Length: 393
Length: 226
Image (tube, rainbow over all chains, first blue to last red; front, side, top):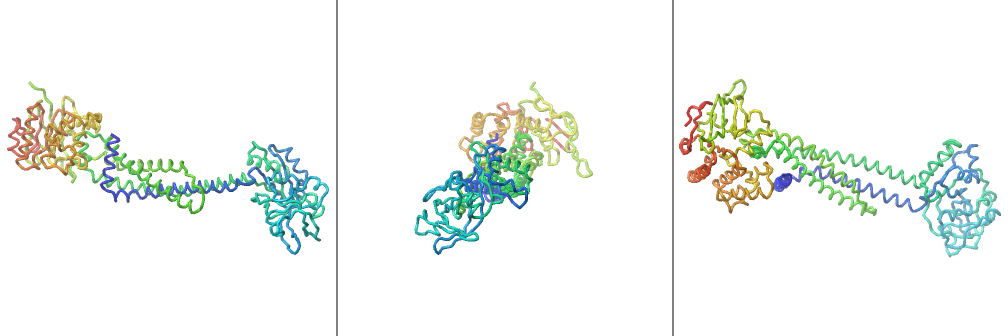
């Protein structure tokens, strides 16, 4: 019976192609935009998080802020305190940063300068282009050695290998530092932009460059098997208990990724909900065409009733017809939506991630629209009086 | 003595139109026997169409009772009435009333669809009947591709397909030329000879007299039953 009804519906659609297409337009546009928006949202989220995943997803950064007695906790030994109190931290890298000018020969450059411990490089997975890193002994002895970021080295030593040369770093007066290493190019993480920074031992920074009152930041490496977002939350809780929430901020790439995902999901759900309104409008189109169809086929309904079709059967026939219409509209709409997302994603240079959820959702929703808006016309058809219907011209 | 296929006992059918009560049928009692070929005759407005609608279970009486094939139809709901129409009554209309977008075969199969008969059996039974009415080579044609006489043959095949207790024909020759009309009349007579009970509604006295029994209706009452 259902198959016969689908056949009847398809026959009547083929007989009225233009009319069918126009009344399906609302459904097609509605489903198309829901699918496109959800696909685009998914693809955008994926490509954003992918780019954030490159550097430092297993790092949590702590930035002390303001000036207060409370900030005294942020000294060089804070790392150990933190590791004793929060689980899942492999290493804590205290960093003191500021900006300065650096000179080699006639060239002077404004750069960021960071005082770091010798394990900073290993923990951050940096790679050397030339030379080597400074050692813990350099740090203890406060030696005036420096590791240059790639861009800085390129500017100051366009000829090539800078290792073994001296640069002058300005504070009140300029002091000469031996270049021991040059970093290879590395994407910036939340805490560090490696290419435009020069790195000196933390103790050297404290004694010869600028006395450290509090660290500029701590970079915590999260142990394998621990969730960076969870560790980040625990650090935040620990610090809030310790000094209150006003004197620091905790940031991690992981929680930023999570935040981005949240924002994108909220945004695309919101847009999809707006698009879904056009599905409702499309539903009214379906109701309209079904009412026309019922009116046009009053006589047919009368004949079918005379042949023994119960009200139920007539109702079923027109519901199946409405469903067939909306499913076909839904399928066209999905194709249309995928087409749009494909075009836009190609232009934006993202990767296409089809949201199967969106496809299933919008098909289900258009079927719901079919049943919901097809109900009234179908009920109307089922209640027609057979005698009157048979004499209907 | 043959059993009664149709029994009407003191049937009334009144319509309220504005402030008036139209008494379309006003106390009609009649019996139609199995295997009979009965004409219901009367001028237009006499109530013969109302009587046909009641016999065909398209309508229910205001009072009195009707028995079709041994079943009372008074207290049936819409669904049950549809079921009785499907099993007991085969309609043949003046205007053929074929489903325009379906082939002759599909038209004939439709009552079996509503009877819940399975696909293959539907097709076999419909094909057999179309062959019986002489349309073996017209099965895949749409009604618009058939002549008036052929359309009425399709309609007759459709009326017969579920093997109903009665064939209810409402002016079946009214839209046909006299030669084609005669052929259709002959087909009815053949079917009656094979044992079908036929009720034939007409205002044409000449046609009515070709039936074996006649019921004359005037102003909602039976004036003469032969």
